[in-house]
Image (cartoon, rainbow over all chains, first blue to last red; front, side, top):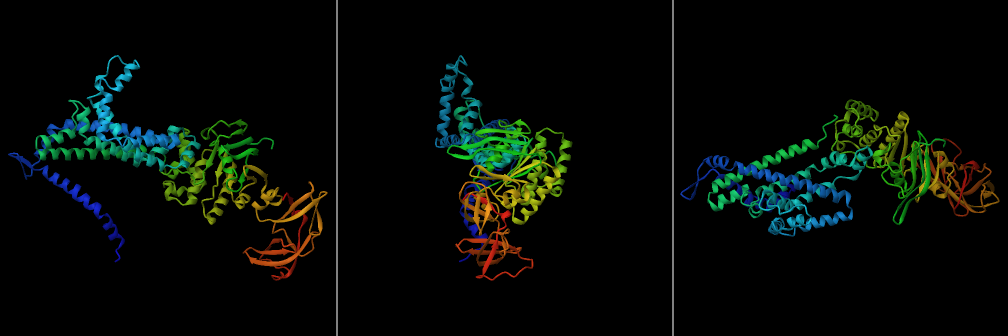
Length: 285
Length: 346
């Protein structure tokens, strides 16, 4: 039996498409429908109301803004750090670079919760960071805001996201060939000019993927803020969880989830546009 | 050379176990078009990269225009390189590629625009100024690389196998273009090649390298007509090499004697296939049997087997009238003009 290439491709993709459709697209569509329903006497009741969205904008806009700001901070720090490390591995450290890469990847073996608890132990008043700073004589008493603060969430999630951001950037840098870099140097460019003008524009795509991963996962996280964020640090994920599980208000939880999704989409589109603007040469013709 | 533009003294490069370039001296004059010629792995690219500042030499010094530049990187040398594979900036248009160097140098933007246009005209790329390198043909990319280097007005332009990536026809056209460009701007060019035909056509001076050493340098005619060694004779053009013996400053060959100062012992007499004459009129002559005759287009390639079994190749222009050639298998007499013979160590 012979099949046309198009049929073959469709057949080859069909298991993945089926899983995607059944376990992602379909539930998402259902959830989107639910955002227009309401709860009547503790029961989910079909309806068509925009009330849930109105409540979200009334009650949760502040939490959403705070979450996006934290996720943006994490994504920016992670992407910059990942680029610096990937740059060292690709251009500077030779064999030593392989060791850096291996140790970065080795942290992937440690689970997500293990990392959170590790940072909890390190950042606390009796933790190793404060101990080190006191021993060095840099501070007299422990810094209290290291743990149970937005800073703790940022530190923990940057550490968690780093390997995920490192890999795409390293792949992007491996695609940058040597000759254009030598040519730029030959034309008088200094190392930072070569990085800005030749290296960064050529790995724009991978920078954006790294940024997207390092932004989206923290934006939806609700475990890290609960464990190291303290009583003041509530992110949107915590509210969504609370709406679904605590208050049994699925329509409002779903509305908040879709609002977050849309906001994240806007942030990513804007980030991509800014990145393209910054890295496309505009001078000359 | 009284006042060379480039002077290499005792330059060498060693990588751990391998000596890529043995200590050597080289001088290049202003306006020269020099070919570094040799087989792959002979150290010619290493030498070029040391001149450009990309590789620090293990020993020796490099002077350009009387200034010692040994310790300077490529960004601080007044040399520019056309890279093998060109190394164009893939995300910049042709005009941006050419304008990058002047822009980094902080030249006035209007001045840059003028210079870019001048370069685009020089290399005939005005029509594709706004395209990205990926949208260009190999020959066009080559010309962008040339323009990008030349806009810096280098005192020496370095070219690493500039034509290797082009197909034969394009290569011939680019060869002419390079020559015209050299004439038009009057600069000093040094290029690396493994193609002896390219070296002879382009350069006014050929430096032949073998295993990290310079084995001969001179005009194309010098190295072709008067090869200094068996390697040069076989690497540059086709050569017949006839074993002979030197005694008392003379080499006995072809029933006569060829004056050749040097120690007594075994030698090789080198003669080019197009220098061998037909007929026994020369004082030095050989007799053999015509064993092969092939039409090569512009010339006929004859193979003559001598009495001792050695084979001699002779080229005859194919288009001219002349005495009829003997047929394959017939006896044939060959003349060796003494002026065309050179003697090298075996």
